[in-house]
Length: 469
Image (spheres, rainbow, N blue to C red):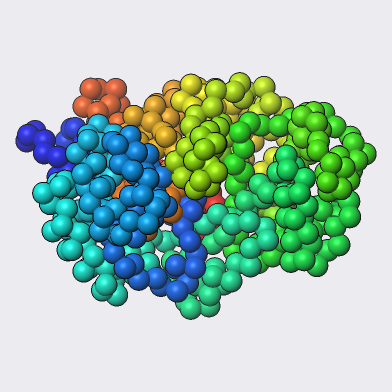
């Protein structure tokens, strides 16, 4: 093989078999980005980005964490510095990110979106910034233009039950060829830790649903109204961001009493909070099953650890980390509770702590139904794990303990319109794993046709068939 060069056409591909799998099979497949945090208003309005800093740095807590670690003041992360000043500080940080996935992502995004092959650093910052910012003024670099550029077929955003979904509707009415679909994220309906905030949210839910909410049952009625509305706009997935699974025993009368207490402004005990969340997770699972949706669980982070910065700049700003709770017992109890009722829908489990890889890979095998291929999924490497090592560890665990061939593949989990190369990064990593097995005689080279189809399935076909978009 020729000498490897950074970020060339065979980036991450360490064998001839890997190169063949990627270039002949993975690279051509469209993108289904079934979990992301894109702003749907930007797609509906076909937003034009004023600069490379806006599209690249606004809202990107991955970059902010690296910049802070490199000694960059908050003013250049989330503060009032100019676009150029923020970008300049990011460019100064990039060389120090070597061996961090940000180094790979940064240069892959520059190359695939803007044709920039140069390394980003202090000496190239101005040239790269001006070049990319100029391109962003062209129509093909708008929000929709970038989605077309990356051959995106479907994106699923993350939306609250009270959201109007007006932007998703506009994208559909405009005839935009990429499907922009909502995802049901009802976390606030479970957030009973703060009675005042909970009541304010429930009152908004009552207003948008047209249901007077005066009990737990009427809360469920209101949520069901919104669930049906989401379905009418094309929603096919729910998503739940939880620290842990909740599977306490409870009675209907207990949950009604707990709802009355918290809606009335009284603080709940820890036991009451856990019972309420347990009931809500079951009810959400039943709704999803009856609609034929897929439910997703992103579990395990501990959020907003820095109280000083939380007070100063709020949530989702880069102060979250992996948790280390024991997840298996309650996860099994929750899934079994739905399965016994015949209400366990297609489910994807994403762990943030890699110590849970083998646990999740074995857990999904407990609840496969023998009808739907890969009904219960071990989700792709998430958050701190959506990088080469994390992806490989997830796919190796799934391969050893389940069926990699039925995996629904990668997603961006991103707020950025430049994050689609994460699909390419994943596909290259996937092809390298399989290709190296072929080169080492661990998989038969004579089955290259099947393995190529397997790569295409994991890259695109499995997700298309699983979600029925």
